[in-house]
Length: 329
Image (cartoon, rainbow, N blue to C red; front, side, top):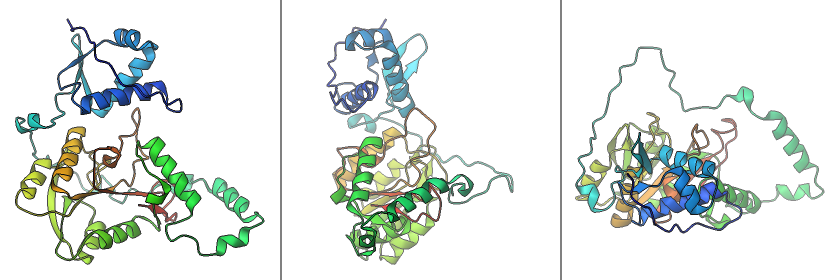
């Protein structure tokens, strides 16, 4: 039988955020700060709903999200528990994680490998056309032909910032954003502003070769780290850090390119700890985070408030059409 649950959750009172998301984030916060520990039992949905004075369906939705994201695990007839796979702090040292890469045998011509290009036949052409006509019908349309901020139109950056904050759990302002001509420009700017010749950067293997070429062009030394079913091998990352000064790590955690595996929650949290401890920058290329099929998309590694050093790259080319060469940093 589950023991009584008396923890007090610090639930946000932000009226703009749905109640179920506020409760979800409060439980995640309790797990992160150690109030809830791996293996701790949570009350049933009826009991939790009674404790928080909300509808039971709300709690069911909260648990579904936390289970899908890996914060919780459930056992039939036993209940719901904080996942014991969240290896934080000292508990991580005791774990015997398996980092074996599973090789799949694929028959010839069964899979078409590309960069995940969207289907242009369903692009919102009519909506785009109406938007362009509306813009160019304004009285001060001639002003748009002037050179504006090198960072991009302020209203556009404000809209992107709002999207990142509301949809991806980040905390950005328009001043922190730079609009680019696609991800390749974002990678080029990031590499040449962050890296100097001789700097070491860790990359996923296999990975996005176009990004590798940009880092090599900036004079960096690339160290590949293998990828398995849980994403980049954090154990190997840690081994490298013990004897090599690393400036940055480049990752595609949502759907790793080209394997499409998603970086597990446990490894995300470990990578954040290592970044803060060793001072290297996480370069997160979140090229297709808008494609998901669960309760809600997994939030970027860079959305975790405790991460100190990061560069986040996004793009609209994968969402609308390849010709929409608009990205952002």
